[in-house]
Image (cartoon, rainbow, N blue to C red):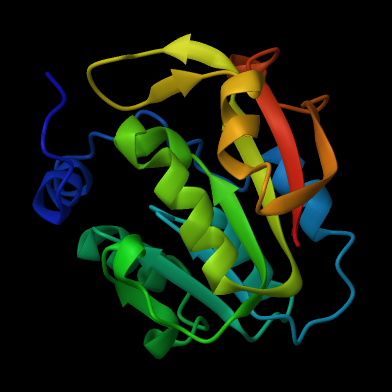
Length: 196
């Protein structure tokens, strides 16, 4: 049976250092994507961000409109301690599905999709679509692996995911990730989806 994946559930995982998915740095695929971005004024959201090394990396590069959303206040506190330059008002302790922020140019996906109950996957893509500006992008990584059925991280495959977003996004990139970190090699998809 899938546990209740509430804010207290996730906060407790951070309080007890029970976050084996955390790689301790910005993942290589997202770092290489971020390194191509030129416009430092982009409004960027990182949902379900956890310790969010991506937000830290973006902030240190001079991106000033980086927003981080997580259920777990402890994860946001960890980020603020490591990266004091990130705007406190851009750290949002909230349920992603209840966000009502102004539209974003870019949303980065890094181990959030695999952490939500699989029954919410269609809702996830609808919410991403609602949070993006026309032409905005959803970019990141999805597991292309069975993983777990009863607890996070939940697995899935490219064909399944495509059914969730086919009427919401056009595909710029949707392919096996060529630069995954070693433990995830051959198990990730890199996505760059454009709001239609």
